[in-house]
Length: 543
Image (cartoon, rainbow, N blue to C red):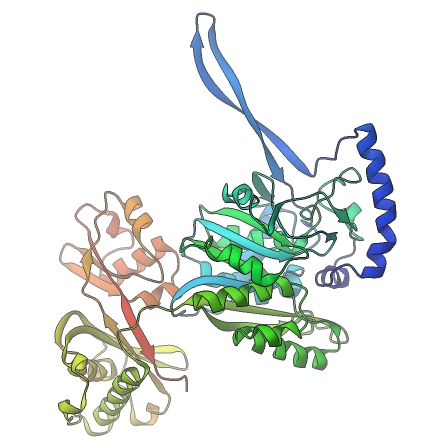
């Protein structure tokens, strides 16, 4: 199949009714003949026979064979993404490096991503997958639409492992367990219209009548290499949606998605409109998704609408918040604008418990702003009336004030341990960040309208016990832990927000050691102490 146009025109539309029905009778007749004579299916799902040592006897050792593992082989390697492992890895590295680092409030529960060829939708998908770097999930559930198969229910993958050019991903044992409960079904053989590129697929064609919803489906497969690049030690549940009620599917998933599970919903948006019309349609669709508006979404265009509606029902049930990361179309990423496909990347997170209300946050930010202006213009802190503050502002808290200018750090100083009342810590650290951060010149009056303020209120740091450097790396929780590193007489801290810039745990500790004045890697030495804390942070709107 030629690369380019074909790669994204095949990525969004369910088989049209006319084309599908035209092939149904042929499939039924041929499939019946295949079953009657007992022909075997082609090796779309391969078997891996593994042996286990069963002990020894007088005649020597013997082996017993464990049951063969069934592997779901890739269908679109070389079509939607590179087939060569090294090239695929380089492609993913480049896409993820081009994504913007972000700070997410709350716990990341789900992401919505496109599923076209990587040169078309990869730049958008990477904005969501960049969020996964450094995070830990035991299970990833992919909810993807069927483009080629006609069936009822939600098809759960039957294989034991899922292969891409980057290697094997174990399929979670949950998959077969879920298949026992409606509306899930265990990967049924069904009516399938094979795609135009089936003879160029990266696995052989199976025997007629042996196709399942997984056989050719690209919408789940293209997500897996991104997951392999950004996560470690996870298992997979691939679900392809057929004719199924999104509300019922959401109810079935609700109790099965725990805190160690990530949901990935795969969909493209509008298909084959001129650029300006597509942008207008996709803007309405994205707005409905971010507003969690099920009724509005029902009227919008998306090839994975069933999965999207399921996600919206889940978000409403669980109190998740949607955050738009990116929305573009193939005209933006490939240049051709006469007929485009729309893409979006959206994150869904559960709220964290907040000690401060929205009004209290605004009050503290106004206090920090007032302090900053008075310091820079008059070289003094303002006088305040403490009885106007809520009682919690008088509590002794650790606190940092961070100043940024056009997204770049301009100053950051604070107290790791509680030292003074919170309102006083905010004022003092506004002064310190503006005038006493040794990395920067003091903030000038002409910068005041360009500087943004962020306040971080810390819990009391607690020691983190670990047996070895490897055990320390395993216990750190990126995006949640603030870290205090002590090596002899040297110490330094990183706020949890730093994980967004340095998601790799080893690099995080290496650079923290250097910040303390030690060499990278010195944190591995005996006697190193680590303390962790959590942060409630809030900031002014970007200028």
